[in-house]
Amino acid sequence: MPTPRPRSMQWGAMRQLNAAVRAASAPGAPSVPTRLAAVPRMVRAAVSGEYDGCTPLHLAALVGAAAYIVSPVDLLPEAVLSVVGLADDAVVLAWFASALVRDTDDFLAWEKSRERTVRSERVR
Image (cartoon, rainbow, N blue to C red; front, side):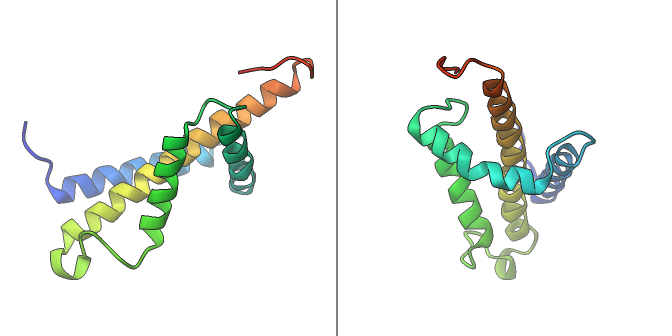
């Protein structure tokens, strides 16, 4: 199987990022502020074991991806490697955005389902 070229990886990542933005802004979808407000609740519920839709390892990957995106330190610097240096950033950003949209969608649906249950019952 041929190794993907950096330019095709970069465009694939941009398409994935575009799909995440479209899903997040679709009619009836939760707004960006709603999603961002849900993140701390999702982390608390996942760490406490109350919500099993997101593992601690997945949360660590999200934190690592966010840190990599905002960090000035780059594994593949753009100044030296040009397109290849941009491709790694694009791939990480695309994964982070799509994972965050998917995770917040799932968590908000889980929260909504809990509202419809009897308070003394535990829902997983």
